[in-house]
Length: 179
Image (cartoon, rainbow, N blue to C red; front, top):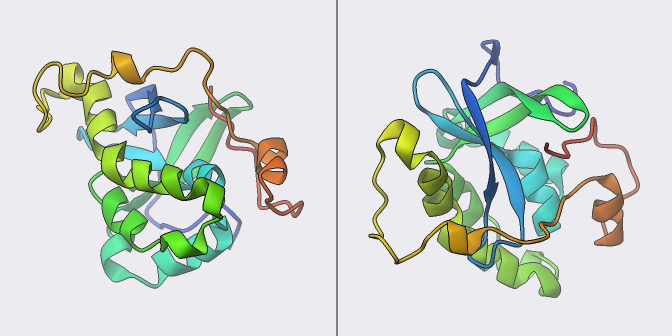
């Protein structure tokens, strides 16, 4: 199995992609992709890099969980390096996956980021696509504006940033730097 291959059933071409800030402070961004069926997916590897957790370990855990695997697809996502097939998870299942990551197993300086992801990821992604999908978020106007979450200078995560954050020098596959 190649590094970014998990699901079977072919590659899905999204109908829309958006760069979405995943934390309330707007520090981290990832590409969210909407499919023709209006399902919204997030690539998993960039989230693992941002959280300082091993993509290989998380991939193994997801493969072992039937419920999580139901929400995993390969999407052809546009990145800075061109289109790439990335393992993505339906935004509805992201909180389930994040709940499985124990804060004590994340480096101390990244624990607040994990907590923030657990609190905000689903809401900010839905907010980004609310107009196109008609999805209303649980918070009303003024209680979580996505504009307040848009960073002036967003962090991007790639191999260099991963190593700078204490990650491995080992090549885990193609770059997933987004847009």
